[in-house]
Structure formats: structure tokens, C-alpha cells
Length: 183
Ligand code: SIN
Image 1: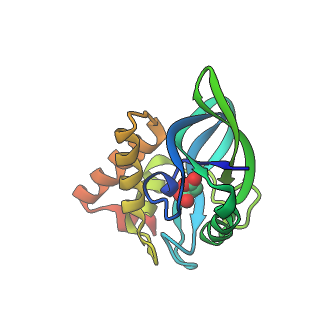
Image 2 (image 1 turned 60 degrees about the vertical axis):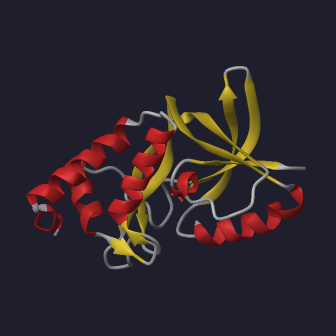
């Protein structure tokens, strides 16, 4: 059977796998948060960056992109994604909504709150300062945030948490005070 995969972070703008179809989608009962530590992509072990995960919020929702994977190649795609998302993420089954009258079952990668790399919430300015200075093998943590914000704008999807962080990182960069406050 073909499988739907929901992406809400880097999988929105950098799906490095084959897919049969791609559709904007929403999951309910979850919200996107920059609460997951990244030691392997946007940070390093002694200075982890912050990337997104989904945390439960009964009244919340998260907009992203759903990809339809061909049954013939889905196992290889998931093997590669298990490696890409290895720092604390696991596959979770979700209901993916294309519209209120069209929903499908699918898979999403979520880093649960009890994973070893989970950082959890912090003050907006502190998260922004951390994102501004961190960098890892996949690039700057700030580019991950800016690329996500740009991708959400392309989808016309509003996410106050992401857009407020983006504004805060840009402000700190203009004022040049991020490094000091992140130490
Ligand atoms: C996702 O994009 O769905 C998972 C989190 C990430 O890789 O940024």
C-alpha cells in the first residue's frame, strides 16, 4: 500500500526522497515547537541547536506538507528518514487532513518529550539567541528557522511561534547581542 508521510519541519522544504504526490495538509491535536535539540544537523554535541518537533495540544493544529510514498520504495525511504531523523525522532501514526471532508492515515516523525535530545520550552529571546549562534553539519540553525518560515509563508500557513522566533533572531542579529546572551 502507498503511504502518506506528513512533514512539518525540514521535510516541508527539503524532501530528499521520491514521492508520487505532494499536498498541503494539517494535523490536529499537535503544535509545532522549537523544543528539540539538534546535535547532528543544526548544532553539535557541545552546542546543540534547536529544531522543531510536535507536542500534544488538544485544541492545536499544525500545517505542513504531506507526501505520498510508493509502496515499492516506502521501506527504503523510511530507512533513510529513520537515519536523517535519528536524533530523538520516532514514527507516529496520525490522521492527515487535506480538507475538513478529506482525511487519510499517515506517518509523522515526532521527537517525544522524553527523548534524550529534548530541550523543551525556554524564553523566546533565549531560544532565539541559541538559534542565532548554533551551526552543524547541515548548516546554520538560523537558516533552518528562516527556511521553515519562508516555506510556511509559501503555504500561506500561519504559525505564531515560528514567526515570532524568526523576528527575534533577525532583531538580535541586527543588534549583535545574541552570542553574549546565549552563553
Ligand atoms: C519534519 O520535518 O517533519 C521533521 C522535523 C525536521 O526534520 O525538521
